[in-house]
Length: 274
Picture 1: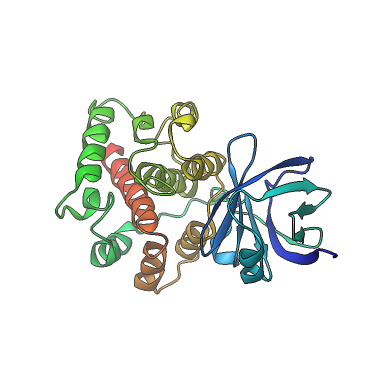
Picture 2 (picture 1 turned 60 degrees about the horizontal axis):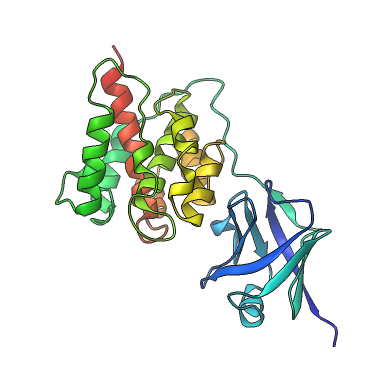
């Protein structure tokens, strides 16, 4: 019986080109994750909103969910992913990039309305209490202590926040999302805030999902929802409540943790500037 062929609509710019094989690492309602030998995850997802530079949108994702199970073996060969029952053809997929280039013409980011919207809509879980100053939790308290220790010296302008790598639970721990938000602000503002090498050196200390997220952010590549958030801010779009709330809705606390890092970075830079 011939295998059914499914087509990919979008492909991330960092997908591998050489032959490799492995097993399905995990399956969720919106993503099927393949663990590459180098340690990052390639995510086959149901729509562009879930994309990253290690992502792949398959047109008939529901059918794929029915035909692939956790542990299913596959081969990645010549723009095709060959599973026991189906083949995913990525040869005609459009290229998608999460890469952000710092503005050549520096435009100040108006943080105040973003902060107001964040305090209004942010979830109480995760690291958001660092910004909202509402009741904390074990993760926000731990993060605050680590950040205070790292940034306690007044003459330090590049902070080592590598101890946040892997802090928290979930597919991407809160600390990883926070650091991604900080790097998003760095990329948008063109200002260096944290020691990226120290973060790169600690990538083995987090989940596969967190490692993948951070490895992309270290290259100024961000998931779809954060790239959309950044471009909306850059383009001076007026519906800031909607823009912020949409980012906050991503994942369990990933969106709020990332924007927490973004806002923390903006506050830190403001304090350091003469």
